[in-house]
Image 1 (cartoon, rainbow, N blue to C red):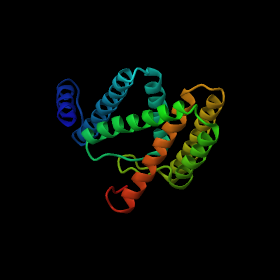
Image 2: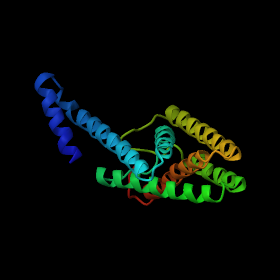
Image 3: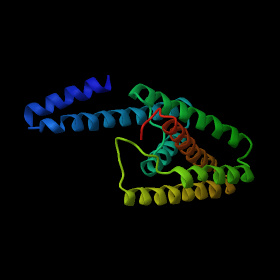
Length: 196
């Protein structure tokens, strides 16, 4: 459906603007990604409204999108799977957040989670993506930035948890979600399911 919509948009735009024939697929792909990203954001905001915690949804979106920009991670093979995966990861993250909050976000557990979830950033980030190939210099920069951002977010999450501000646990668990998706994509690429 997203592909059909983006194709119609490109056709519509090409009536009024000259698009080079070799760039039509690039424009269509860019529109597809934009529509899918907007849909993902809307779905998470709806989910966070359903669970009556819009702040958790906003924190999840901010941390997830900002961190994934540099780290990469799991990419679904269809837009439907992408949207479904995004909603499921939010649901699992939010459920885990509610469990941690129920137990008053124990600091040793938050610290342990934060240390463990940094390992995939050190070892695998940025995960290659065939749609966004990176030069060696860009890979090194993305690796360093993803590690710094993940570390800073984890530190902020721990500080907020120490101060008994619940959203700190959501920050920590969202970084953990990105970390798990890095591992999943790395394994899938090594097994040949996703080729870079």
